[in-house]
Amino acid sequence: MNAKKRHNHKNLKIWQLGMQISYDISDIIVEFPKYERYDLASQLSRCSVSMPSNIAEGSARTNKSFSNYLDISLGSSFELGTQLLIANHRKYINEQILKQLEDKIEEFQRMTMGFQNGLDI
Image (cartoon, rainbow, N blue to C red; front, side, top):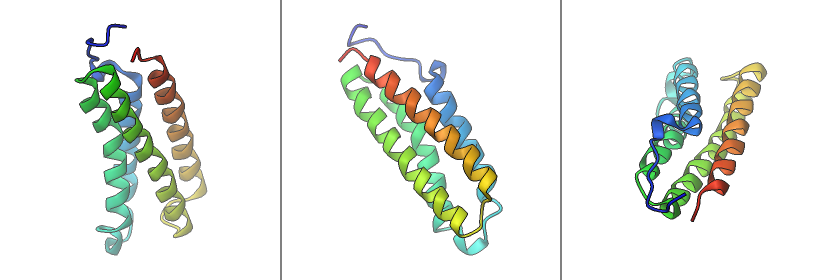
């Protein structure tokens, strides 16, 4: 792949999955207690939005720079996983929702790392 080639982020499966995860998080945090609105719920939202956002921003750059944005997206996904464990511990989400989201996040991480390893940098 030519290092100057740019990617259309909307066509990337990793961006699409990141968007799905972000939508899922948006749907669950509305049920959180109001006092969590500016704490854990806000952090969950920011992490989940960061995942596809960094893919979109990086897709307009060179592959080497794109790889750095993918690293940031991956970091956000690991942070999100930790925050979901906290949400489960606080009983804001049940084990089933936690497992579904963890599975999606793990798939996102595998796909993103695979995509990143395939970049010609």
